[in-house]
Amino acid sequence: MATATPVPGKGLIDPTNHMLILIDFQSQMSFATKSIDAVNLRNNAALISHAAAGFKVPTILTTVAEKSFSGPMFSEITEAFPGQKLLDRTSMNTWEDAAVIEEVNRIGKPRIVLAGLWTGVCIVGPAISAIEQGFEVYVIADACGDVSDEAHERAMERMIQAGAVPMTSLQYLLELQRDWARGETYEFTTGVAKKYGGAYGLGIIYAKTMFGASEGGH
Image (cartoon, rainbow, N blue to C red):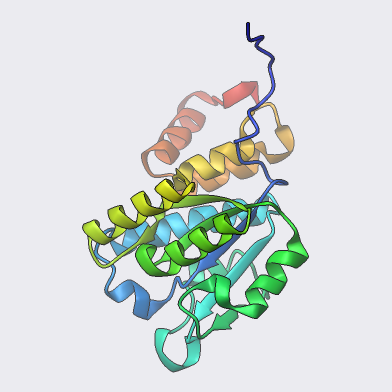
């Protein structure tokens, strides 16, 4: 018979057990993205970027043909990682780029979280490649987009069938915090949620303004 203990499952994300790879959040890639509107995409990219930066999650920022074709990475992302080098590629599959793989090996985490454009090309490629090489892969579905709903959904299904785990942007932030009693990151987490957390963020603003309320009694 199983015995319950108050410890988190190993399948959950925490700030120390993964790296985040943000792929091709660039102007040219976003123009043709139809599965999610640009406002939501930029908001969700900002949410996960600021979450990762605040929790000190090792993060790789990579672009494709930045100068010659695809344009700059979203400022919402680069502002969260000031001064960090962008690894520009020629390969559509991030996993085939030697500089990216060198950084993956330098960071040395067995679990990889992916987000970017487009789901069916630039996320499927590294997801399947990393899984085949023994990494655990998570994909932040609402921080990815493709040229159609069909393209995005089939790509997500393909990665899930290969063993990837889907999650969402707000889920990513809250899983990093996980316990409101963690006072050292409480204000940071609720601050990111207030700014980028949509209706949930509005609820936090309302509760704090009207009642001085807080999760966990802080």
